[in-house]
Amino acid sequence: MSQPKRYNTFSDELKRLFGCKVQRISVDAGFSCPNRDGTLDTGGCIFCGGSGSGAYSIRPELSVAAQVEDGKEVMRRKYRAEKFIAYFQAYSNTYGPVERLQALYHEALSVPGVVGLIIATRPDCLPDPVLDLLARLREETYLWLELGLQSIHDKSLTFINRRHDYACFVDALKRAKVRRIRVCAHVILGLPGESREEMLAMAGELSRLGVDGVKLHLLHVMKGTRLAEMYERGEIAVLDRDGYAGLVCDFLGLLDPDILIHRLTGDGGRDNLVAPLWSLNKFEVLNLIDAEMERRNSRQGIRFFPERSAPER
Image 1 (cartoon, rainbow, N blue to C red):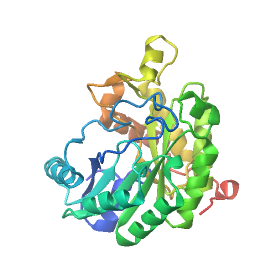
Image 2 (cartoon, one colour; image 1 turned 180 degrees about the horizontal axis):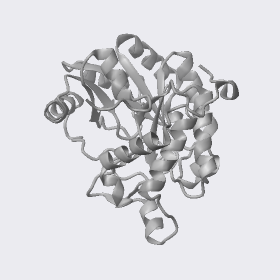
Image 3 (cartoon, rainbow, N blue to C red; image 1 turned 120 degrees about the vertical axis):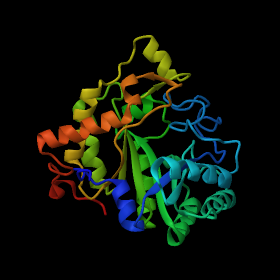
Image 4 (cartoon, one colour; image 1 turned 30 degrees about the vertical axis):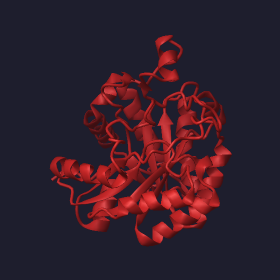
């Protein structure tokens, strides 16, 4: 039997809620992004590839229901999963008319064995009518809203061409929380120009804001991106494996222990990754983080002080 983690894992939460192995199935529902379709820009964020950040093994030619059915067979074989969550991952999955969003979300929920939805989007793609739809869905199913923050520092958001500021994230989070929608914030560690102290400050700030979940990503350099061009010119560097593991351990120590950890590292597609290549061995990285937490006798929240953070829960 494996040792319990020293942090509050999303997978354990799912097992407690549903009593079995639950796996996410990534879906590409054909959405775009205001940072790519010309509304804000056409180039997107500097780290985003041609299929949307993180979406590398999805079959977008299939319908949403067919993608979920296809994913179910894979997850059953690979992880012995019994239930599933449809994960609307590629691009901005609230960027469209409410009627279209409702139809696509319900299409995914209609697939047998699907017990919930995770909807990933940008904080500037959440008008109130969309949040009202998500609030209704929250009454019907297990629901998470994933908000791409990446950094609390506006200088970094400008550098990566995010085209929204930190205040936009805070506003979207507050409007979601009023509707009791669970929110998971995406954060990138290793952005150029950010000091270690600035990266770790995000743990305290997310705790103060009262997010429900956190996804940590290391900075990936993917082929065909503006970030790759910068990397090839020697303008930026990426974290080494041990440095990243230590940084994650420090981050977890400062984070509210009630926040669920949805991910501690990313794994860009093998065919598209430029750097860091060590990240391809995801389980080795996770084992290193676990070992470092054990060596330190640390745990999530060991340096979290609620009276200083005053979470907005």
